[in-house]
Figure 1 (cartoon, rainbow, N blue to C red):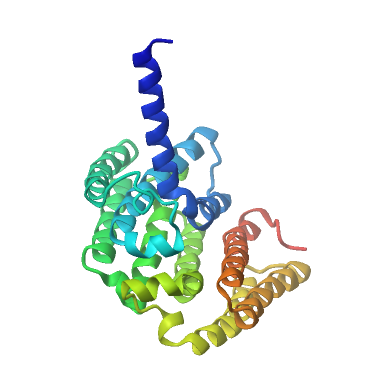
Figure 2 (figure 1 turned 180 degrees about the horizontal axis):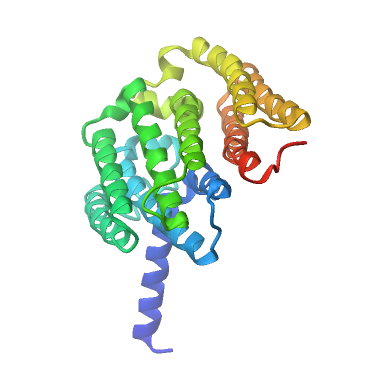
Length: 290
Protein backbone atom coordinates (compact mmCIF):
# COMPACT_ATOMS: atom_id res chain seq x y z
CA UNK A 1 0.00 0.00 0.00
CA UNK A 2 1.46 3.40 -0.99
CA UNK A 3 1.99 6.15 1.54
CA UNK A 4 -0.67 8.29 -0.16
CA UNK A 5 -3.24 5.48 0.01
CA UNK A 6 -2.43 4.79 3.67
CA UNK A 7 -2.71 8.48 4.56
CA UNK A 8 -6.00 8.81 2.68
CA UNK A 9 -7.40 5.74 4.43
CA UNK A 10 -6.38 7.03 7.89
CA UNK A 11 -7.95 10.41 7.10
CA UNK A 12 -11.18 8.80 5.91
CA UNK A 13 -11.36 6.56 8.98
CA UNK A 14 -10.84 9.58 11.24
CA UNK A 15 -13.69 11.43 9.53
CA UNK A 16 -15.96 8.38 9.84
CA UNK A 17 -15.09 8.14 13.53
CA UNK A 18 -15.86 11.83 14.01
CA UNK A 19 -19.27 11.37 12.34
CA UNK A 20 -19.93 8.36 14.59
CA UNK A 21 -18.99 10.33 17.72
CA UNK A 22 -21.36 13.14 16.73
CA UNK A 23 -24.29 10.69 16.64
CA UNK A 24 -23.22 7.96 19.08
CA UNK A 25 -25.25 9.01 22.10
CA UNK A 26 -28.46 9.37 20.07
CA UNK A 27 -28.60 5.86 18.65
CA UNK A 28 -30.53 4.73 21.72
CA UNK A 29 -32.81 7.80 21.71
CA UNK A 30 -33.49 8.14 17.96
CA UNK A 31 -32.23 5.32 15.74
CA UNK A 32 -33.41 2.34 17.81
CA UNK A 33 -36.93 3.72 18.51
CA UNK A 34 -37.30 4.56 14.81
CA UNK A 35 -36.38 0.98 13.89
CA UNK A 36 -39.17 -0.20 16.17
CA UNK A 37 -41.52 2.36 14.58
CA UNK A 38 -41.17 0.60 11.22
CA UNK A 39 -43.57 -2.07 12.46
CA UNK A 40 -46.47 0.30 11.69
CA UNK A 41 -45.41 0.65 8.05
CA UNK A 42 -47.59 -1.29 5.62
CA UNK A 43 -44.50 -2.33 3.65
CA UNK A 44 -41.24 -3.82 4.88
CA UNK A 45 -38.91 -3.75 1.90
CA UNK A 46 -35.25 -4.20 3.04
CA UNK A 47 -34.01 -1.61 0.52
CA UNK A 48 -36.63 0.92 1.66
CA UNK A 49 -35.69 0.25 5.29
CA UNK A 50 -32.00 0.86 4.50
CA UNK A 51 -32.89 4.11 2.71
CA UNK A 52 -35.05 5.25 5.63
CA UNK A 53 -32.34 4.56 8.19
CA UNK A 54 -29.75 6.33 6.01
CA UNK A 55 -32.04 9.35 5.69
CA UNK A 56 -32.61 9.32 9.45
CA UNK A 57 -28.90 9.08 10.30
CA UNK A 58 -27.90 12.00 8.07
CA UNK A 59 -30.59 14.20 9.59
CA UNK A 60 -29.45 13.16 13.06
CA UNK A 61 -25.88 14.01 12.02
CA UNK A 62 -27.07 17.45 10.87
CA UNK A 63 -28.85 18.01 14.17
CA UNK A 64 -25.93 16.94 16.34
CA UNK A 65 -23.37 18.95 14.39
CA UNK A 66 -25.53 21.99 15.12
CA UNK A 67 -26.43 21.13 18.74
CA UNK A 68 -22.90 20.26 19.76
CA UNK A 69 -21.40 23.43 18.27
CA UNK A 70 -23.45 25.32 20.88
CA UNK A 71 -23.03 22.93 23.80
CA UNK A 72 -19.26 22.34 23.90
CA UNK A 73 -18.90 24.00 27.30
CA UNK A 74 -21.49 21.71 28.90
CA UNK A 75 -20.27 18.64 27.00
CA UNK A 76 -16.90 19.09 28.73
CA UNK A 77 -18.77 17.95 31.86
CA UNK A 78 -21.43 15.63 30.44
CA UNK A 79 -19.87 14.07 27.33
CA UNK A 80 -16.19 15.03 26.94
CA UNK A 81 -15.65 12.37 24.22
CA UNK A 82 -17.78 14.28 21.71
CA UNK A 83 -15.88 15.76 18.72
CA UNK A 84 -15.99 19.44 19.73
CA UNK A 85 -14.95 19.23 23.42
CA UNK A 86 -12.36 16.54 22.61
CA UNK A 87 -10.74 18.79 19.99
CA UNK A 88 -11.42 16.63 16.92
CA UNK A 89 -13.24 19.54 15.26
CA UNK A 90 -13.60 23.23 16.06
CA UNK A 91 -16.86 25.03 16.79
CA UNK A 92 -16.50 26.99 13.54
CA UNK A 93 -15.95 23.86 11.45
CA UNK A 94 -18.84 22.11 13.19
CA UNK A 95 -21.19 24.92 12.18
CA UNK A 96 -19.90 24.85 8.58
CA UNK A 97 -20.47 21.09 8.59
CA UNK A 98 -24.00 21.64 9.88
CA UNK A 99 -24.97 23.91 6.95
CA UNK A 100 -23.33 21.56 4.47
CA UNK A 101 -25.34 18.67 5.89
CA UNK A 102 -28.52 20.74 5.60
CA UNK A 103 -27.98 21.07 1.83
CA UNK A 104 -27.03 17.39 1.56
CA UNK A 105 -30.14 16.27 3.49
CA UNK A 106 -32.44 18.32 1.27
CA UNK A 107 -30.79 16.81 -1.79
CA UNK A 108 -31.07 13.31 -0.35
CA UNK A 109 -34.75 13.88 0.42
CA UNK A 110 -35.39 14.94 -3.18
CA UNK A 111 -34.58 11.38 -4.26
CA UNK A 112 -37.79 10.17 -2.58
CA UNK A 113 -40.71 12.58 -2.87
CA UNK A 114 -41.75 16.20 -2.45
CA UNK A 115 -43.28 15.43 0.95
CA UNK A 116 -39.96 14.03 2.18
CA UNK A 117 -38.24 17.25 1.00
CA UNK A 118 -40.85 19.32 2.89
CA UNK A 119 -40.29 17.15 5.98
CA UNK A 120 -36.54 17.75 5.76
CA UNK A 121 -37.08 21.51 5.34
CA UNK A 122 -39.42 21.65 8.37
CA UNK A 123 -36.81 19.74 10.37
CA UNK A 124 -34.18 22.34 9.43
CA UNK A 125 -36.47 25.18 10.53
CA UNK A 126 -37.04 23.46 13.90
CA UNK A 127 -33.29 22.98 14.26
CA UNK A 128 -32.61 26.67 13.60
CA UNK A 129 -35.25 27.65 16.16
CA UNK A 130 -33.86 25.20 18.74
CA UNK A 131 -30.20 26.17 18.37
CA UNK A 132 -29.79 29.54 16.67
CA UNK A 133 -32.79 31.17 18.34
CA UNK A 134 -31.90 29.45 21.65
CA UNK A 135 -35.32 27.94 22.29
CA UNK A 136 -33.40 25.03 23.84
CA UNK A 137 -32.90 27.26 26.90
CA UNK A 138 -36.65 27.39 27.60
CA UNK A 139 -38.17 24.19 29.04
CA UNK A 140 -41.50 24.36 27.17
CA UNK A 141 -40.16 25.49 23.80
CA UNK A 142 -37.35 22.95 24.07
CA UNK A 143 -39.90 20.15 24.47
CA UNK A 144 -41.94 21.51 21.57
CA UNK A 145 -38.88 21.57 19.31
CA UNK A 146 -37.88 18.07 20.44
CA UNK A 147 -41.37 16.74 19.78
CA UNK A 148 -41.40 18.40 16.35
CA UNK A 149 -37.98 16.92 15.57
CA UNK A 150 -39.06 13.40 16.50
CA UNK A 151 -42.24 13.76 14.44
CA UNK A 152 -40.23 14.77 11.35
CA UNK A 153 -37.90 11.79 11.92
CA UNK A 154 -40.85 9.41 12.05
CA UNK A 155 -42.73 11.11 9.23
CA UNK A 156 -39.76 11.07 6.88
CA UNK A 157 -38.97 7.42 7.60
CA UNK A 158 -42.62 6.41 7.26
CA UNK A 159 -42.96 8.19 3.90
CA UNK A 160 -39.83 6.51 2.57
CA UNK A 161 -40.95 3.09 3.82
CA UNK A 162 -44.48 3.40 2.45
CA UNK A 163 -43.34 4.81 -0.91
CA UNK A 164 -46.52 6.87 -0.89
CA UNK A 165 -47.13 10.63 -0.93
CA UNK A 166 -49.14 10.40 2.31
CA UNK A 167 -49.60 8.05 5.26
CA UNK A 168 -52.48 5.72 6.01
CA UNK A 169 -54.80 6.39 8.95
CA UNK A 170 -53.11 3.96 11.31
CA UNK A 171 -49.66 5.48 10.70
CA UNK A 172 -51.06 8.95 11.39
CA UNK A 173 -52.52 7.74 14.70
CA UNK A 174 -49.17 6.15 15.65
CA UNK A 175 -47.33 9.35 14.74
CA UNK A 176 -49.76 11.45 16.81
CA UNK A 177 -49.38 9.20 19.87
CA UNK A 178 -45.61 9.29 19.57
CA UNK A 179 -45.61 13.10 19.30
CA UNK A 180 -47.80 13.46 22.41
CA UNK A 181 -45.64 11.08 24.45
CA UNK A 182 -42.45 12.89 23.40
CA UNK A 183 -43.89 16.33 24.14
CA UNK A 184 -45.04 15.35 27.63
CA UNK A 185 -42.17 13.08 28.75
CA UNK A 186 -39.01 13.91 26.78
CA UNK A 187 -37.58 15.88 29.69
CA UNK A 188 -36.70 12.42 31.02
CA UNK A 189 -33.39 12.96 29.22
CA UNK A 190 -32.64 16.15 31.21
CA UNK A 191 -32.28 14.64 34.69
CA UNK A 192 -28.81 13.19 34.04
CA UNK A 193 -27.59 16.46 32.43
CA UNK A 194 -28.56 18.87 35.20
CA UNK A 195 -24.97 19.95 35.99
CA UNK A 196 -24.08 20.72 32.38
CA UNK A 197 -27.44 22.38 31.67
CA UNK A 198 -27.11 24.59 34.73
CA UNK A 199 -23.62 25.64 33.63
CA UNK A 200 -24.87 26.54 30.13
CA UNK A 201 -27.81 28.52 31.49
CA UNK A 202 -30.51 26.16 30.27
CA UNK A 203 -33.74 26.12 32.25
CA UNK A 204 -34.93 22.54 32.06
CA UNK A 205 -37.78 21.14 34.13
CA UNK A 206 -35.47 19.13 36.46
CA UNK A 207 -33.68 22.42 37.26
CA UNK A 208 -36.77 24.62 37.64
CA UNK A 209 -38.91 22.11 39.58
CA UNK A 210 -36.59 19.29 40.71
CA UNK A 211 -39.11 17.60 43.01
CA UNK A 212 -42.19 18.29 40.93
CA UNK A 213 -40.62 16.94 37.74
CA UNK A 214 -39.88 13.62 39.48
CA UNK A 215 -43.39 13.38 40.92
CA UNK A 216 -44.66 14.08 37.41
CA UNK A 217 -42.65 11.14 35.99
CA UNK A 218 -43.90 8.92 38.82
CA UNK A 219 -47.54 9.69 37.93
CA UNK A 220 -47.40 10.35 34.19
CA UNK A 221 -45.65 7.25 32.90
CA UNK A 222 -48.13 4.74 34.42
CA UNK A 223 -51.08 6.87 33.25
CA UNK A 224 -49.71 7.19 29.71
CA UNK A 225 -48.99 3.46 29.66
CA UNK A 226 -52.56 2.65 30.71
CA UNK A 227 -54.06 5.10 28.20
CA UNK A 228 -51.94 3.74 25.34
CA UNK A 229 -52.77 0.15 26.24
CA UNK A 230 -56.48 1.04 25.97
CA UNK A 231 -56.05 3.09 22.80
CA UNK A 232 -54.23 0.30 20.94
CA UNK A 233 -56.52 -2.43 22.37
CA UNK A 234 -53.78 -4.53 23.94
CA UNK A 235 -54.62 -7.91 25.41
CA UNK A 236 -54.81 -8.36 29.22
CA UNK A 237 -51.28 -9.71 29.74
CA UNK A 238 -49.71 -7.26 27.29
CA UNK A 239 -51.48 -4.39 29.07
CA UNK A 240 -50.26 -5.51 32.51
CA UNK A 241 -46.69 -5.84 31.26
CA UNK A 242 -46.66 -2.46 29.53
CA UNK A 243 -48.28 -0.58 32.42
CA UNK A 244 -45.91 -2.31 34.86
CA UNK A 245 -42.96 -1.21 32.75
CA UNK A 246 -44.12 2.41 32.74
CA UNK A 247 -44.80 2.28 36.48
CA UNK A 248 -41.34 0.88 37.22
CA UNK A 249 -39.62 3.59 35.15
CA UNK A 250 -41.61 6.28 36.99
CA UNK A 251 -40.71 4.76 40.38
CA UNK A 252 -37.01 4.66 39.41
CA UNK A 253 -37.04 8.35 38.47
CA UNK A 254 -38.65 9.19 41.81
CA UNK A 255 -36.47 7.03 44.07
CA UNK A 256 -33.02 7.01 42.44
CA UNK A 257 -31.75 10.55 41.97
CA UNK A 258 -27.97 10.68 41.59
CA UNK A 259 -26.40 11.28 38.17
CA UNK A 260 -25.42 7.65 37.54
CA UNK A 261 -28.90 6.45 38.52
CA UNK A 262 -30.51 9.02 36.23
CA UNK A 263 -28.46 7.70 33.32
CA UNK A 264 -29.80 4.22 34.09
CA UNK A 265 -33.30 5.65 34.50
CA UNK A 266 -33.09 7.20 31.05
CA UNK A 267 -32.04 3.88 29.52
CA UNK A 268 -35.15 2.33 31.10
CA UNK A 269 -37.22 5.18 29.70
CA UNK A 270 -35.85 4.47 26.21
CA UNK A 271 -36.88 0.80 26.54
CA UNK A 272 -40.37 1.96 27.53
CA UNK A 273 -40.36 4.44 24.63
CA UNK A 274 -39.46 1.63 22.22
CA UNK A 275 -42.44 -0.25 23.63
CA UNK A 276 -44.64 2.75 22.76
CA UNK A 277 -43.54 2.35 19.14
CA UNK A 278 -44.39 -1.35 19.17
CA UNK A 279 -47.99 -0.91 20.31
CA UNK A 280 -49.46 -0.04 16.88
CA UNK A 281 -48.37 -3.51 15.71
CA UNK A 282 -51.38 -4.81 17.62
CA UNK A 283 -53.76 -3.08 15.23
CA UNK A 284 -51.96 -4.16 12.07
CA UNK A 285 -50.87 -7.68 13.09
CA UNK A 286 -52.74 -8.44 16.38
CA UNK A 287 -49.28 -9.11 17.80
CA UNK A 288 -50.14 -7.96 21.34
CA UNK A 289 -53.64 -9.36 21.69
CA UNK A 290 -52.61 -11.85 24.38
